[in-house]
Length: 534
Image (spheres, rainbow, N blue to C red):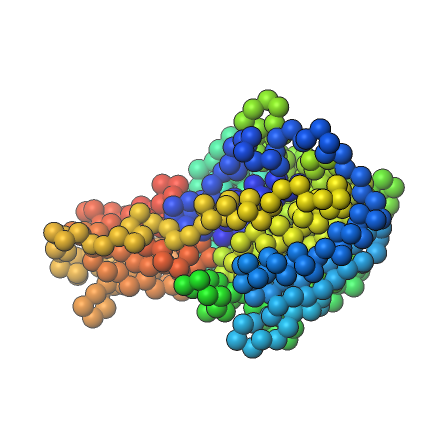
């Protein structure tokens, strides 16, 4: 999930119940609650939720027109939706195309990348292992993953699987995502987290991907296998989720695959390089269809509903901690307002009508917008998956549906609300976006004076090389090469493009004696590199 989008989606999910840029490249914290955001305030006096068969039927009947209107408004290439109720799949349909170039249609079995909906899927894998007695939610991660360490040795020793799934370890928001963008693999990202500062343990919430990934690695280690195999063995196969995988290669091998799209000059185009999330697979790397996800939703609902039925995957005792409040994800700004809460891999709360709600959304800037929403008491769930940069369409589909199912009417303009949140926080990043070099720019020094290796504990080595009449910059594994253009004096710029840097982003690379500061990587003050003596 893109970094800024993830923070916004977390807030949006809380309203109805991902991993971008240096401007907010560590993601905004969940925005403060206000009376201008109806999903958080006191519900109207007449907001009494009553889910009936008739209302659910009406909500289902509304979906084609609702989705058609939203797709016409946004141009979203493709979208698929499924609804479960009372343990049965009662609706599944595809809309639009899998790829704007091929024009092949989306159907209920089309496979999409789930982005951060993967966190909830992963939490049910852990719940299975808790059911089987392999681990507990409060098992220390170090017990099974001794090489994992954070900056504070005491936290390293005591941080649990649940702490990491509840985003309360003290890591800053989306710690490690910048490393993934640079090309580091999962093991290397997890190893480097020890170089990041920590906020107070268990008293701060900061959404992330590699906290959950570390916890999942510990669970897989305890089970004696790797995460992708474990997920397949204990979840996908038992539920008949034949199109679901935690491996990117499996997604790319699917013929009936929804390719990711981004907006380029207001036109949807296939993303030049599809999002490869294997490094954070437990948190963002699942691919699935709405058909498969309907089976997953039914499983979660069966274990979390009034009857609390055990099933082939999880016991209610193992699942309930995941779908109940473990962290305050969005503190209320005023006493009469509601706070937002996070469980273990799930957003949890209540609807305006007072029903318990379990949700999550996902977003890849490189081409995915996903959401699901469950009402355990009513046995009702909806999943919506889209193959374009997140713009609020999936959340709006789900929120409209749930309004109709609970109240018989749509109670507010959900799409306008979600679009406003995303538009305000996502876009090109960098202080110099749309700026021009100063007309009186100071000249650069001889290019060879900038060349060399600059080191940083967290990011690794930044290598500056003279190529022809210019400079090139690589950081870490060197899988990404940025040509540097002179801006002013010892300041150069480059144009990053990745999951966490949208088209049009601009980053400064500033040389100061033996120091190189890379703006793109400096959101948390970690972007300073020191020239290597060698």
